Each structure stands twice: as C-alpha cells, then as structure tokens.
Length: 633
Image (tube, rainbow, N blue to C red; front, side):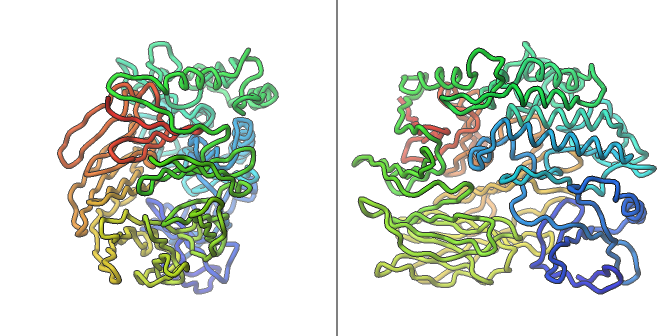
C-alpha cells in the first residue's frame, strides 16, 4: 500500500500493521520510528475536512493526546488517513483496570486507579477547554502504561468540535440523554455527556462492576433501560452479583458523588476534589493488602473473603468442594498436565511452585517474582518469558524434574504486531516463532530439538497449542493477519510430519471492531470466541472447529445486556461445551446439542473472576489465593 506523507511516497507493508479497528488500520514504518500511520478502510470527504480542521487546532491539546499531525493522501491527493505519534509497547486499554488478574499481575491497586482517573480528569478538562468533546468516551480509547501509570487518549479523530460531530456512541457508556438522537446529523454531545461516561468508567474500574450491566432488576433488564431510569447495581431493588469488589472500599462521599452523576441529578463536571479526598482517605489492609476508605471501621474485602473461605470445605447443594492449596500470597499461573497440577504463586516477592498429584504434593521456591512475566509448561519444563513486550522476548527454561529447579536453557520468540510475545506449549512440546516460521521444540537427548511447523507472516501471526492425544501428537491453531483480514489455520503434528488445514472463521462486518479473542482447545474440537463492538453495541461470535478444520457450529449473539461472557479467558471448554461461572452457579452450555445446565451450589464457592480448569472428571476453581476442586456428590 502506497500513500503520500509530507508529499513523499511511503510504502506500508502487510507485516507493518500494529492495530486494526472497525474503520481503519494502523501501521508503523521503519524510516519513521516515532510515527504511526492510520489508514481508513474507505475514504470520506467529510472525514478529510474534519482531519484538516483538527490538525490546525490540535496544538491546544495535552501531550498525551495522540492527535493527527499530518494528512496521508493517495496519488490523487485525496486524504486517506493521517500520521500521529507512535506509542511503543506495553500500553493497554483502560478496560483492563476492571480485570482482577491484570491488576494483580501489574501490582495496580485502588490507589493507583484513583491516580489514573485523576490524570484522565485533568485531560478531559483540558480537552473541553480546547473546545472539543470526546463523545464516544469508552474503555477502549484511553490507554494506560502499567509500570508508571501514564495515560494516553487515542482514536481522537472521532471527537466532536466546531461543526464536526462525533457520529457514534458506545452503548455501555453513552448518556441516556442521547439515546434517541441521530449522532451523525449534527454535533450533539455536551461536556456533561463526557462526564457521565467518565463516571461509568470510574465506577467500573474501582468496583469491577458496570453500574447498569451488573446485577438483576425485575423491571429494567437492559443497560439502556437501567441507565435511563438511573437504576444502578447499588440500588436496593437490584440483586447484586458476587463479582467485583465490595462497594464499601469507596467512601460514602465518593459513592454519593458518583451516583449523583449516574442518576443524572448532577450535570456538572465531576469534581476533582472527590478523587483527591478519596485518595487521601485510602488505607491499606495489613492482612489482605486491599486499599479501602479509611473511614470504614474494617476492611470490607477481608470480611467478604472470610465468609467465602468458610464455605470451601462444605458439602454444598449438588457438589463437593475441597480446597487443594492456599497461598499467603497470590496465584500467578496454574495448569494441569497429565495428573499433576502445577501452580506458581508470588509469596513475599518469591515465585513458588506448588505441585499436586494423586501421589503427593510439594512446594519449591524458584526465583524472585518478575512483574508481568508469562509462563507455560511442557514435558517437565517451566517456560518463563520475563518481558513479553521486549523486542525479542526471551524464553527461559527451568527443569522441574528434580527436587530443585535447574536452568535448562533459553531461546527467543517474536511478538504479535509489536505487542505481546507469542509462544505456547502442548503437554510435551514448545511452539515459538523465529522470523517467518513457527518452530516446534521437544526434549531429545536432554536438549531442545526443533523442527519447522509452518511458514508464516512475520509480526502478524498468533497461535495456541492444543493438547496431545494418546499417541503423543498435538496441534497448533491460530491466524495470520493480512492488513485487516485474519486467515485462520490448523496444523496437526503426526509423528514427524505436519498437516495444515485452512479454517473458515467468518470475517467481521464492515465497521465492526474486535475487542478480545479467546481460543479454547480440546482433543476433539476448538472453540473460538470473538468479542466485538458494532455501532456501539457488543457482540460475541462463537465458532467451533473440528479436527479436520471444518466448522461444526457458528453463531453471533448480542451481549451488551449480560455479564455471562464478561471473562472469556476464565471459562473452560470440552466436547462442545463451555463452562462459565455465573451468579446462579457454574453454567454448562453445549453449543452442539443446544442444551444448558446449571450446577447449583457452586455459586457459594466461586466468584465470577475465578478461573476454571478441567481436572479429569472434576473442575478446578483457581482464585487469587487458593485452588478448589469441585466434584459431584
């Protein structure tokens, strides 16, 4: 693809893509290392005029606004996109602040979240002072950098200013005052609508609950209905879910201020003083480490955890729950290989390995905890990626087949689109990327012996490894991206040969944006879950692929008004069935047979952000501090 940048020809290659949205693709170019280039999927004259006007006035914006700095044109000098400052690795969407695992992995506390929103408050105030309104203020167009809590504003070409409207709003964050307004006709957003969205984001990040999506109300059941009538999850006639954090971690004053905006009894800018006063009140619990309002008489998190822990050894309705291990720290990683559970925990700054099998259990201290590291296991080896966002991420191997862990060797892999390291393990093999190849490594004569699996597109390939069958063969499933299109593949290993199948996963609709992908592998099929946004609403595309690469099931559903698919990566899959934790218990949804079953009693010992794993004919529930096994009575 050729464009003109500052009247100079610039060639953007398919392996230079660093991001794809519903309306545009973002590239980097080696000759401009500090610039990123956004190219629209379809040129538009009004958009071109808006970009030119934006560039003229963008000097009034804060430095962390990633605004258009120069137009990109085609050979006919038609505007097709723009150049902007490039953000390097290790930036994440604001949505991650509502995810417990992300916050614990990066040591982000409630106090840190208040710090982030204090920055965003100052930024939004400056944006309004510059005569602009964000409009579509949502959890994907503000970014955070975990190590220093820096923030950035992206997708700013959609902002409203002068005669140029913001033409879309995300349902989960849009003010009800705009529900019946055609946003494309004329500028419709006011600063107060941004502040409404800001408070929804603040509430969700602090409590890990969407104020209008979480919980159940008998009369108003959709986000739109609840927001329109000001029915929040804290209202007494809403059945509160077990997910999220106790609202008592916030002060009464902060809760009242947020509720005034959510119920739209206040139309003023959210007071910065409310964040400052809450930050000064925050104290850390010496027992559990939770930050909460010091005006409370005791830690609300410890109170909730104590009640939860008392139930773990109980005979519950329909199931037996038994705690297998508990750590004084926090669990970093858990997997099951054959009959053994491997669990890594951070205990007082030391990463500790717990192993549990029918033959016994042990605990092994390994190394000083590395914030943000990724892990996997194969054979008797632990794979550690200390910095998943490095230019060439290292993979360190530890041999666990002894009383003490011993270094076994190291290798490297590559990242996807300049982002996270790509590697995956089956029961007996390590798969990684080098250059334009996926490599398969296994232990032979006490060394890592590798062979090529597949030629791929560098910097644009993602994959995961599937489990080994009884013959020791496994598979790799994933995609490579060519500009905005994903091409899916399935590669089987059969002894020393590899067989490739192309897989037909439906493409996204025009204007649809991918938010998250979760792939669940099993011995007989693969489940692909894609969470997207389209015209402001959320959707989930469900595809099941057989071992021959053929589609067994496909469906697309609207999910804006449910939290059932909130944590895609924490559910477990087998034989066509997805099992997820809900407030009603553990729900098993068999897509192939079109049946649903709920395991009652499990809701007493699980939380919505716990992770499920298969363990023979039982289920493992992995919580922040313990692992519980659930079985039928």
